[in-house]
Image 1 (tube, rainbow, N blue to C red):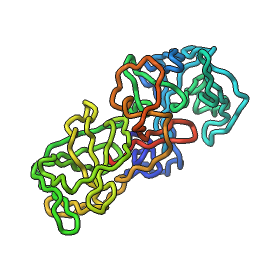
Image 2: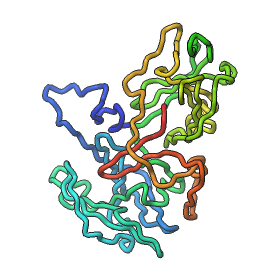
Image 3: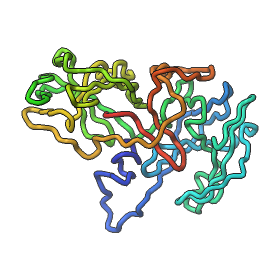
Image 4: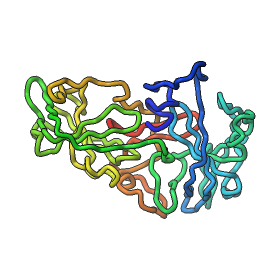
Length: 317
């Protein structure tokens, strides 16, 4: 997904390769200016606000935003005395974050022993995504992780025929499915509900969350557990798949123009952790939310973002 996660060019499982005469280092880190205003909110207070954020892409991790110290509320950072070591970037000094009557330990960090080739991160602070109330670009809330500028989704209509079977029974057949192409993933095929025998779909509990598409609901298909999914209210950028259903080709038989689809590399999502209590109500909107967040039922899985952990964008694609 994007530059460094799943099968992106900097990920350990990249499906492509750089055409160079010499082998590249085992791990490549990439840092660049975000060129967007980004803000961080904690306990109802803006503790960081910058137009000079640097985004760090690290193999197997979602991108992490680093703020210049001068754009961070100095009173919000409380030295913890804790120092760890990053395998590529050296000593990492940790801070608690404090605002009002609230303090969260190990909520921010700074690289304090950077090698000479990584000085772009000198004097910059990153915040643990799960520890903050919210991150924003301008006045719009960003859910999940800092936006990966190299992540792309394209949705295309097609006249190819898609058929879904289970034990010889046709569950769905469509001559106008929709295909979703997403960075780092194999194509996903979505079927209009009018072309599905919905009596074969049994809704199951539990949702996952994708920062680019929204909340995902699941179905059992006969005895195949969580073999189908849908975005009931997909984000506007991908709203063409709203309400459509996609099927897992390793759990049911999916045929495209008569040829059976197989599980391809990159088709599975590998979870890397759980975010702070993101709930269904939050995931349904990315508009500004100025009050403190309360946990509700229907909690969605999301990813964490930290120097030592990446995250999960939810199921399928």
